[in-house]
Length: 83
Image (cartoon, rainbow, N blue to C red; front, top):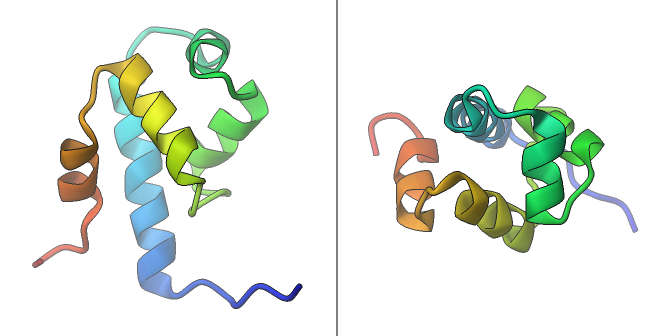
């Protein structure tokens, strides 16, 4: 299966998501948050750094739950600027 390349907007949205999650994590360790969300620390690292700009919905939902963020907040904060 060939995956179509991401658009610049999709990459930017992934970077915004990563920055938001990193800020919400605060002083908590990446390993702690990842374990609570049921994902690997490597997956969380990739999301936070924008190397995984389109994580699975359930991964984002699990992270949001652990970090006390609503999915509505995430959508609003990761939407393209000017929308």
